[in-house]
Length: 171
Image (cartoon, rainbow, N blue to C red; front, side, top):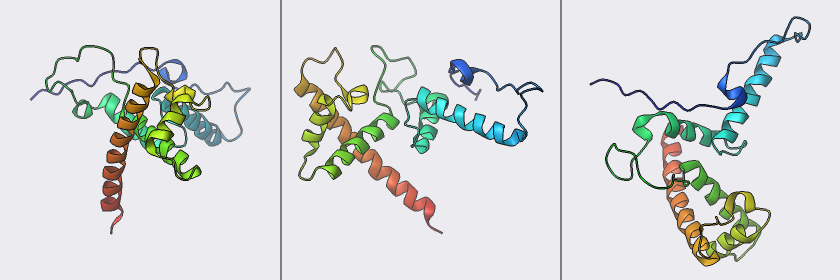
């Protein structure tokens, strides 16, 4: 069976081109240190491009696999044709980020329910960049319900990844 070509993602800026060595005048004394710093800088740019927090580079592997491996790009329609409508915003890394944000809030505030934590995420300016409701949302209550549902999805994923990690760490 002929192999399908993986979808090509065009990366912006420094991610779209290989690094250039500095000129002889600006050449660092230890080129391996410069190369390592440049590699790390570009790795964090890649994480930012895929919407993964810099401290969670383990989620970057999942985001890259979803972006480049056709076997991991599940179709909600169950067929090969592209899906109609708006692009899906609830990727696995984003679900995991929501799960962790809700769990952090619940750990900081005793007695906070999942719904209350989701409401706090949706209304707080501190979390507005990631979790405020979009303009298309009809009401705050509907958005809080959406966040709560996606939290449950993230919880299921978290349970699944813990089981996977446990099987890989056994000797």
